[in-house]
Image (cartoon, rainbow, N blue to C red; front, top):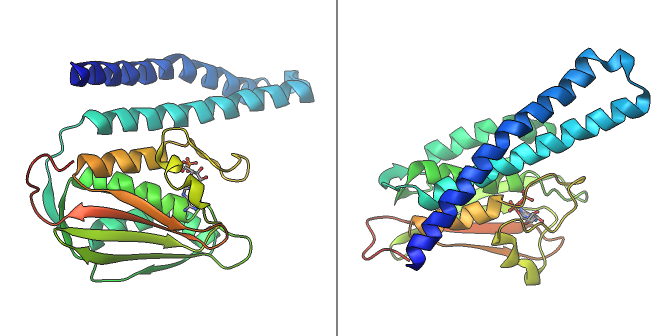
Length: 236
Ligand code: ADP
């Protein structure tokens, strides 16, 4: 009964997030039209208000897209396949190439990383979030570095994404994997607070686990355990 209620709630969550995007698109479209077509008729204060509406609509759309991604991931069929880690990781790094270049992040990938048996789209989603956090929460005190490497465990490969950024206090290590949990103000570090919840949900659904080692000011190392072969039981 609990499983049925849970999947009903997930479907409900998905359809709300999906349906809210339609009126939001209209609000965002009219705010943009005000800024682009009617700017000559607006006072500076009117322009500022329209800019704020457009910015908030954009933020809300990012939230809804992340919620949709989370719901999809919670309910999706996950057919695992065998793949080596290098290829998807270099693909994902190329997607954030601009951020890496603009923020002058030194990236190191320690090959060979190994081969896993996992759901490739979910793996990519997890890594996208860990990499984008790794190049976002930078420390003002040192040149940013991002290192991706693996260690071995029985039946699993532990994939590490390590940065030398602002770090996270121990008391927050568990909390940050919850939905909408953010430790930093959104002006300095924009985000929705869904990324790490998605990472945890994705890893668990693939039969793996996630965690973090970090101290404030000392950088963070996030890890994900990925199965190297078919799991016995349901993997949880
Ligand atoms: P978002 O990045 O959208 O804020 P996440 O769920 O990805 O949301 O992360 C939750 C919070 O955990 C972040 O707001 C930030 O406070 C903290 N955090 C995540 N990754 C890092 C990191 N690499 N270094 C420091 N803090 C981090």
